[in-house]
Image (cartoon, rainbow, N blue to C red):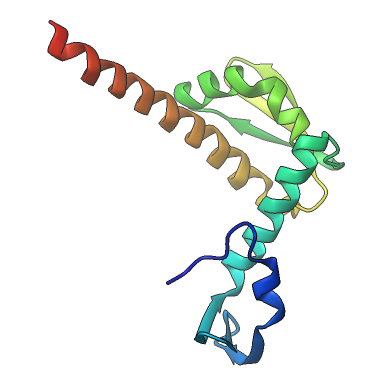
Length: 147
């Protein structure tokens, strides 16, 4: 299944929607044939493109939460948080370390529903930790033959 990438915006003009399937997919047709578009993935892509554009312009808007969301981080998440704490603000997250591994999310990007803030925040930290592990594994793989 093909993905829409950069430079394909002209292609989108030729898409003719035919209908919707299970409130989750858009059935459409273009010059090349039938398309099945996952609405959730398309929405995530739109938000991703918007955040990337805003991130380069440093203008992601935040909304303050009425009640800050407190999160108890795992040791790995706490370490990842320390690495990207400043970057999170540029992504629209206002945070504050309360004690030890407990943090409070005070503000979130305006396009993010408050109900999804905790999950997205944890996902960001888990992704950073996974990338750190991948780098460590690559270092081990490249240095072990030298021993």
